[in-house]
Length: 448
Ligand code: HAM
Image (tube, rainbow, N blue to C red; front, side, top):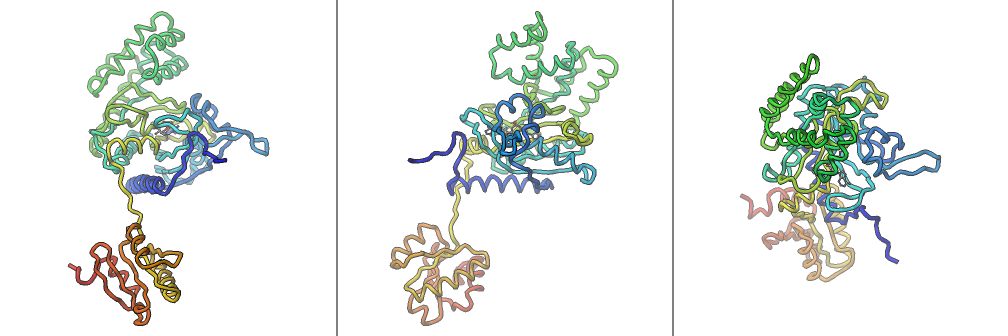
């Protein structure tokens, strides 16, 4: 019987692994460029960590079970609750702002489909201990750079920027209390995927008769695309006292965020779009999601502020902002934009071996070159020269190290440069230096 992997779980053959390594490599490089430090956390966590903290949608998708010790556990569907716990536990000894990243696998029992699997990788990037919009700007700039690193530009992707704080102000002006606002934000989150009548029906449960007119006003807000229009809309809200002051301050935060993004070169990618509110329960301020430029398909990345989560998990008061980018939608995008690199995983040297005595010499030289960090291969079975050369060529080797009876007798190894076909003998005792020179400059005749 042929066993199969579970639905939504991928197997990574070497080509797929090379692509995955390439993606992880770019993510890591960008995180380092922004001076973020890498951390890690358990894959299996107490179920409780996700109940309420992550929100209904994710809890409904958990891979959860009881372990042999009777504990309710879950495979991590996301990193944020674990990270908030890690930070909370050491908050006092960590130097702020805390800038951390992780690349790891996550698990959600979703219906496998384009852009959605049950096991996927995320690049999580978060900043703790900085409440001002400079932290939001830094993260969104990093998000933009992480996509640009793959050769994508503003024709390929955009970042939709929104703000739960502004929404709360707008909903307060509409007369809604905290609970009502939370319910309405949940409905706005699903707006794009829900028929209008159904949305009105859901809103009517909170608002009664005025639901349809209310939705018209919500849609007006969602249609806003520039800061001046947003600013005018908020300034015209009937807000009083402290709330009016909050609204004014929030617009100043927006100005600071947008100007920070502009200066970092991310301005072209930013689209103001209050249609984004984010489904996870813990977001508190600016929220954002990255999409393919036309808006098609599932999000490439999502994140925002979550200033209350560290405390909710038993830590001190600690502001936080972060995002996660997934590998599945990223690879789909790179494929559709013809940005998938072609990988050449080829050896630097391949030994061509003529007989048992030659094999001893080849293995000893291979050991030396490998200890120097070069990629060296040789046939495991004795084969004719012709077949060995053919295979060395197929493997894309840069140089062949040829060990025949004549070469052995002379104490030399004949080296062929596959790119030019040139062959030359070199003393075996100086192979280490020869290898370094060949890898750096090629054959002496071809030196420039
Ligand atoms: P999220 O929006 O649930 O946010 O996921 C972030 C990204 O992970 C998505 O945009 C998508 O690329 C990828 N992703 C999520 N689910 C799947 C799936 N089933 N298959 C493939 N890819 C998927 C979070 O997880 C937040 N914890 C992000 C965050 C970090 N917020 C603050 N810090």
